[in-house]
Image 1 (cartoon, each protein chain N blue to C red):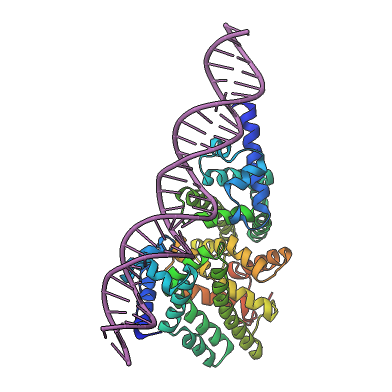
Image 2 (cartoon, each protein chain N blue to C red; image 1 turned 180 degrees about the horizontal axis):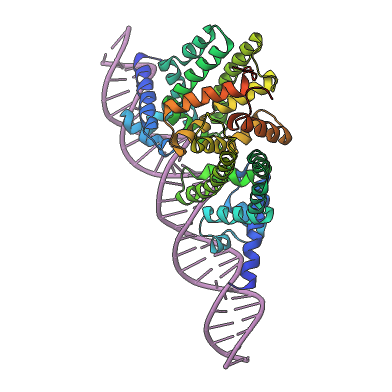
Length: 200
Length: 200
DNA sequence: CCTTTTCTTGACACCGTGTCAATTGACAGG
DNA sequence: CCTGTCAATTGACACGGTGTCAAGAAAAGG
């Protein structure tokens, strides 16, 4: 792949990003993206054989751009399990708005397109791993709530952190991002941490 | 509308139901439904001008069949706010699997179709009202958690009870229905009820 | 200058929704 | 028995979006 080829590829991905982040991600057509990138629709297919490939590439690009791995990993350096849980929620919670457009496009596609479904599932499984690790940290500290097995606790955390929940709270309920993060943190602690029920 | 007309309408709606409940609701086409109902695709459009109308009618049919209003209303007769919360969650939580196919079809459509979006939003607003009422009952008892305003508490409950969360926990996490209901009840109580943090 | 790669134009197949027109069959009332 | 009405049928078609294909232009690089 020559330099030119790479340049165009990048331009396409950036165009996709730009189109997707400005609301109504599902309404963004392959032709719209091509126009934004300054190439023909067919040239787009030369670089990305299918829409799912383009979404996938763009999502990866965003991951790199925002260094999400680094951010999530940073939460691992927290001293206690509880602090780690907080840091994890904050890192992911603040990442969601940045990828929301892309996420929405994926979510709309995944029911009808095998490739989109796989790509999205992989991303969500990565998050799930992070959840499991955070729960393990709680468990090591002995601060995991006795109400839940580690597996169940991880499932709950993972579900709390879903893009759909973020969407519902931020859009349908009108919450601010700050509120979303703080309430989610508090709720997770309350549900998953064995906070001395007696006394405080 | 003659009897015959009504009969066909009902047959269509039942065919829709049957097709939708057997997984992959999004893959169900107008033609499939017509075939199942034993009429031509065009006759279907004679009764329901658009797919969204058909989904809406079918959802209403299910509501009546399962008497969801009655079930949700029954939770209002609980003695305490906490009992009411439990009853509400159970009533709704056990209704979700019955309408899941329909819900999925709506959710897939609502991003691209105005009518579908409105129909679905109405249904969800009805649920939201129920959530608000349950929270008010807690508040009257003085058992609402001091962590949340009534509005915020209702938002949290509403989000917890979303079809998407049910889907994720039951399908992606492999929870049983029983587990889903019991964990959701317990979580709601823990998040929203001012359970004597000191002592028990 | 010639070759390879990239991109362009334009046409087309496929699929699902929704529309239209012409026709058939059944049933009811005068 | 004829006529009008209503439900349904058949078959064709427009539209919008994805993905494919072929022929040729343009640009980069040796």
